[in-house]
Image (cartoon, rainbow, N blue to C red; front, side, top):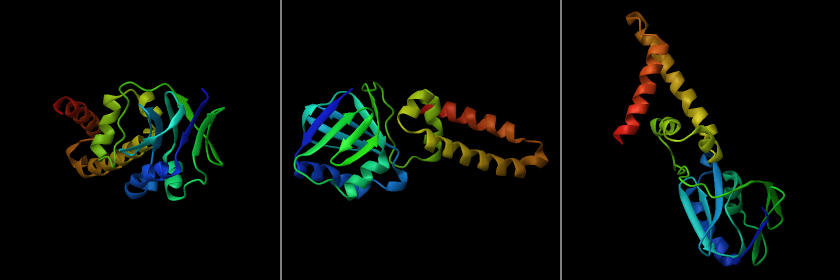
Length: 184
């Protein structure tokens, strides 16, 4: 899937401003690059920003959000700015990084700005794991599951005199997460 776009430098810099202001490097998952009408759009941690572009771009391209965050901090030189996808690599100016080019995902997982623990854990009951992985949520989900396991482990130690085990508590937590989806 070969793709190529040209974006006016001033429009590109304006498009990056919200990412510089609101996106944080440590919370950045995957960034999704796509076209919406005549605008090139970058979606990252709940922020979508776009700019007019010309060229051929179909579907979505995923890259590490940290890369886009870095480009927002230190934009490439040149006017217009060329973005290309060739041989599973995204080229922005002189920068080249690996990427995933795919068809646009219907019912895509919405990136959460700063997800609460419970909301993050509920994602696995709302979306198939492969879609969560494609959306870049696997590391955050693993981290949330580990945090939940530690909390349950501490609670089990406190409740041990009542013969309530860690597995009892984990079943209760999973049921609570599933039921909560229906209530929302």
